[in-house]
Image (tube, rainbow, N blue to C red; front, side, top):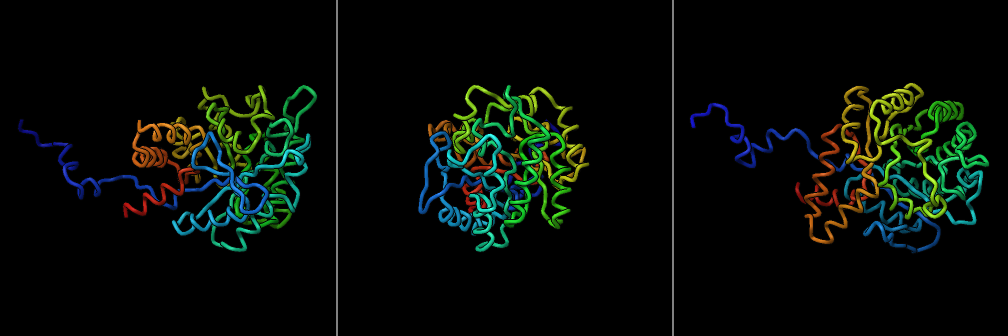
Length: 330
């Protein structure tokens, strides 16, 4: 065949493949989620998330140090709250001496250049496992929940959180939190909005990790999280949160919602993050443990696809491993 254009020509050598590579994964792209709990020198394996642990604050600091050495610049905290501290009104969520607040202070004392993101939601603190306060019929109350979320966000900002991340999907909470932060002179505290958080089936291992699965029981979160069938709705959610003052927006989950990541980034051109959620992690880990997949190659490919779709940052339980693999490649 006498072909002028052979598209394989540029794929024939390492150097030429590298020259035309459009996307690269960096450690700057990775955000490490950490599950924290009370105690000293204490860790607990999470059965549904092999390799991920709940950590007491002293061990949390060691994990942050490990991440820092691998040039991971951001972490996000998720608390495992003692059952005795859970309540209908989630008062523990804004306790200035609560688990998250103490964790933030400890991290900032040791690693001031690590970006600390805190989850703003009530499900770890409620006896029913919902992300907000509920009425007698179990329906999650929007405005009353926002009032508590404001107190939680201010408490976290006061502890030193760099970013507060409302993941609850209540209407109007971004504007209310932004106004409260401004009034309390936390003008540079950033808001990462879980703007398009879908009512996904892939959150189960996370609920195991924070201990909210049993509280939730047979209930679901479909009255406030988004329907997986919907795409246009994500635009309305993201647009509203940006107008209310969100600095960054989150798409969750990531791997099954690459189309949403791509559309949101292209349309709004706003810092867009994506969450490779617990179920996605668990699938990759299980397949790898059974030697059905090469773990390193499949994980890095999955993360690269999320970045290629348009994500500026990726929350992933594989952050430590991925950063190590990226370092080895360099």
